Image 1 (cartoon, one colour):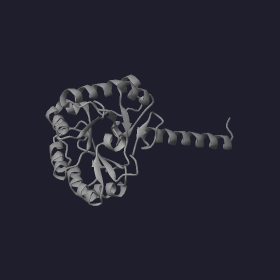
Image 2: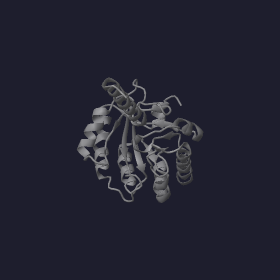
Image 3: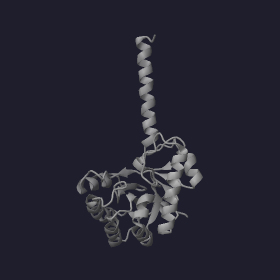
Image 4: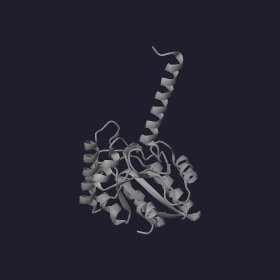
Length: 238
């Protein structure tokens, strides 16, 4: 039988292990399950604006906002959404933005096998390449959650992992709150995460995202920041 001290020590170790696993799965700077970038170099006044879960019916309006300010972004797209809205996926690429892989069906990868993860990533790669002509080199996991085998899976598919420096929680906050979060998190090399879709939902309401981007972009431009794709931010000499 455990002594009181032994039981307490066991409980404390279990809590510590759980906390470590939670950080490994979702911590923005964690690299336990494979290399992952969460910010770029701090020596340039450059920022990467990124959007997950698209394309959606609201993406064209977002492209208009970005074009109005002549800024580039990176769109992490779901393969199933690309197949549903191939013309919008093409429009993103044709507008000069970068496209990344955000899985095929937007699953939570925790407790799934490497085989499942690889199938998700390859199906998304195929859909994006077929319908937009883009060949993604970056991957952002749905919900920001990684799992055992993710590093090997990314290497097998030829992708590199990207998290974020600051996230807007734009699926639940209003435009003002989103702007506040991202303006506070903006600094040299920041990767900012927003969403132009809501999972695989058709016709999602991204009004708060559009409002926030319309305010945030000119604000950060006025601060002297340049908006770059993830590739340009992380690999400026390429």
